[in-house]
Length: 70
Image (cartoon, rainbow, N blue to C red; front, side, top):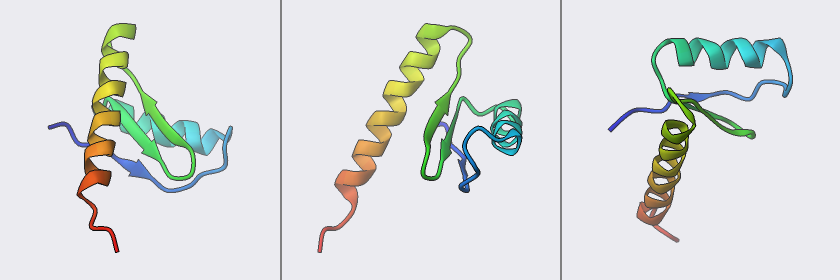
């Protein structure tokens, strides 16, 4: 049930990308999707980050299954 913000494309390795991701994490999100990059996922420990990664992957797969095919 947790929302995941999606940020627009920002140059890889840039300070702006780091600042934007850290801003979303400080807002309380456990994951951030980055257009044309992938995802950043955090947790209190490695296990929590891993479980969040699995949950995000499952949510993405579910979403793709629900998209009408033409």
